[in-house]
Image (cartoon, rainbow, N blue to C red; front, top):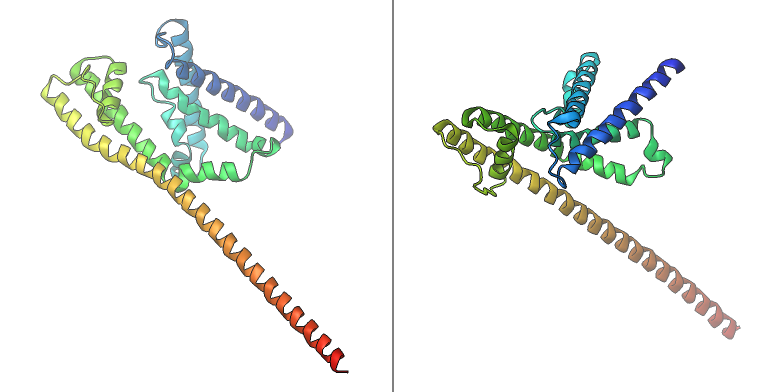
Length: 252
């Protein structure tokens, strides 16, 4: 890759990273404000950024040699492309992390090593990212079908899907049609299963980490005990030798 191409790639990555940070920040702000991000200038901006990320994703997918590996490695990117609600833009923050790792910024800042390996192991080695991906797909698909059947907005349908799958069930939105009740029943069964797997995966990860730490500490302790035992044995031998020497001197 030529220096000129590398320069343009760096500029492109900075722009994409900036858009990802800005859009995810706006999406995160919806937790603390009542501003409607789907209307007005802000809504046009969010939809434009969504279009840019769709083009970026499709271009990278078309040039990828390993399509299956691309879909797995870019699961969060796909979640950031969900058009139902701007809140999904939060998943674009993973693109920023990937750019940071690509240019080894964690290493330059002294943050690379155990921390990043632990994060990568949590998301990929435990299968958490795949469970999260399937769970979000179930939620989004259920919300989409529910909004069509019950004739409500996608935002309200998504809220209903989340509260139903997590068994909270506030009751502010509920199905009125037979098909809506069938969708709700399927979501209840699927949601409980996959969300239960998510929580058990998180619990299992931290439990195994604690167990590994305890095993490591125990191993170090046993190793230190063995070292101390060797040192005591060596001292006993030296003391025994010195006693023998002194005894011989007395005899002579």
